[in-house]
Each structure stands twice: as structure tokens, then as C-alpha cells.
Image 1 (cartoon, chains in turn green, yellow):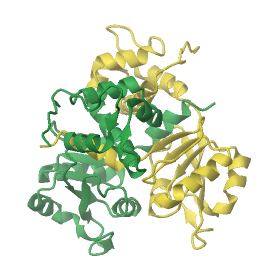
Image 2 (cartoon, one colour; image 1 turned 180 degrees about the vertical axis):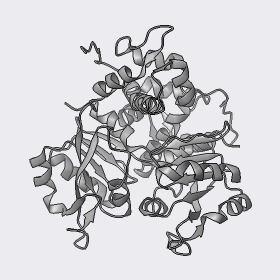
Image 3 (cartoon, helix red, strand yellow; image 1 turned 180 degrees about the horizontal axis):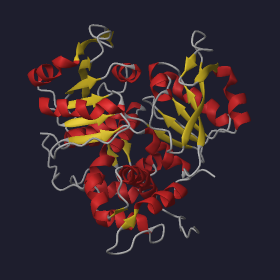
Length: 210
Length: 210
């Protein structure tokens, strides 16, 4: 199916909502639904239907007035825009409690990502199994990431080590980092960082509590 | 200091950005800075300075044209708006790898939240220490949460158990749930749910990769 996606100059804030739409649409599809509307999506997500229509209009007209959106088609289009119609190899750094939880997380499959290597600096952990992987020494990081051409990594180390790990990852060629450590990272332009910060989510909810 | 905050009818999308501003401002303060500008904040966060000025204008004028924002004052105002100028007791359900990582997370302190109890259904875990807490049986959940008047909880259990746990938490009086399990929760109106979903963050970055 040819794509007529016009995806230049999309505001970052819109890009940030597309994975949310993709997740909601995938759930609708799993529930057996074929068609949805901006109204239904908006109800599910707490986003106005006008906002959803506007966001999706950046990519050409996915939906038609009155007939709604074809879910399977919209899912494929969003996957293509977000470049997750392929599977990205991901490096995980840190094999503590959090690293184990991330390595065993069931939410990656079919969503564009696959952990392919895990690193730790702790001699007691190296060589052990974590999920389906053998923990590699941190010294191997650059060689493994370069050789496998890995562009995406997750950092699950203590805060005081996170910047050093990020520097090494970037030196090895990583361009997108998901950081679980509670610290802001300094990265050069052209490298993208996102944070797993539970407090941001908690604070967003307490606003609404009495 | 009297507050003239006009915080009714703030769009949820704006509320969602306030914790991000609060985190960035706190970091600036830690770096020893007293004053900032919408331009500087925007540069740090990848959000336009116009958006930042507009967001903050919902709460009355925090900043003056040309003189910038007083960081300490803005932090206090944002904490008040988000209701984290107090400390919320938080219940954690699930004491596996992820539960351990969450219980030991260093990012909660001074940001409005304190884990006060941890529950698990696994007889081998009950009575053990996790962080500073003794793991309580899941059967105690309702009594403990009701007695302590806990309104905020985090779910770190396998996906297939998450909805059942959420139902029990809500029944006990919880009104804000941070869910780490890779599943959408159905909750009644008046209950708020946020998700820790690493894939949403990863997908937001792959858009920008070649």
C-alpha cells in the first residue's frame, strides 16, 4: 500500500502523542473492533476529539468525516511514521532489580523493540542469565554495540553512574536513550533522551485529588 | 505569601507539563541558579518558550517580561498547584524485581511522595524487608489502606493480576494509581490512572532516527 505521509515539521508534542494513539488502537484491535472515531479515542484517552483529528491530520487524512478510522490501517500508518514497522535492537545497561524487571518486561514484543544485550560492571553478575541473555561485562559495551549497530539503549544503573554510561553508549553509536535513573543526562545534539520518572506521573494525578 | 492562583479549567495537557517544569526548575535551583527565562526552560525541555509562557499564564503571572522567573518562587507555586507541597503516603503492590526497584528508587524524596507500605501475595515474600518496609500480605491491603487513609498507589504486579489489584485498591479508597504492568486498567470516574510504559518513550525517539 503506497504511503502519502507528509511527516516533516510535525511538532514534537504531537509526535509524543502518537505512541499513545498507537497503544489505544492496538487495544481496540485486540478487543475485536475494526473501526473507531476520534470521539471514542478521545474518551478512552482523555484527549479532545478535536485534538486527535488535528494530530492525525498532520499525516494526511487517515479518516473520513462520518465513517471513522479503519483501525488496522491507522495502526500500520502510525507504525510507519514512528518507524516501529521494524524491530529495533536495544541494549540494556544495568542488571540489578530494575534491570531484571526491564529484561523480563512483557510489553516490548510486537511494539518495535527487542533487548539483544545486557551489560553490568559487577563481576558477580557477569556471565549470569537475565531473561534470555547472558550478562556481559561493561568493558564489552562499545565492541558489542558497534558490531551490532545498535542505536537504542536503556539505562538502569544508579544515578551516579548514569551520565558515564550515557557517554559510553553515545560514543559507541547509540542515538536514543531511555533513562530509568533519577537524573537528567547531558547529551550532544542528535541524541535523544527520554526519562522513566514515576514522580512526574504521580504529580500529574495529585493535582486532581482533594 | 498569598497565592492568587486561578487553577480551574486548566487543560489536562497543561497539567501534564507542570511536573516537567517543576523537575527542570528544581535542577536549575540545585545548580545554584536563582532566575530563569521561558527561553532557557524551553531550550532545556525541547518545548517552545511561547508554550511555556502560555502554560504558566494559566496560574496568574509568575514571570515578568524581561526579568524572567524567580526559580524558588515558581517552584513553590508549582508545588502548590500540583498539591505536592505536602507528602502523600503511597502503597506499593508487588514485591518482585520491579517492586524492589521501585521501593529503592531514590527519586521520590522531596518530590511529594513516600512509600509507606508494600503488599505481595507470595507467602515466601511476606514478612521480608523491602527498602525500609516489611512486606505485608495482600489480604491486609484494604485494612491498611483504609486505616492510613492512603489515596495513591503503585502497581508492580504481572499484567494478568493488575486489574484485580486495581479493583481492590479502589475499593479501599485509592484514587490515583500508577500502573507499571503492561495493561490498560478500567477504573470508575473520579479515579486517575497513569502508566509507566517504556515503549511509548522509545517510539517517541525512533521517529527521529534514520
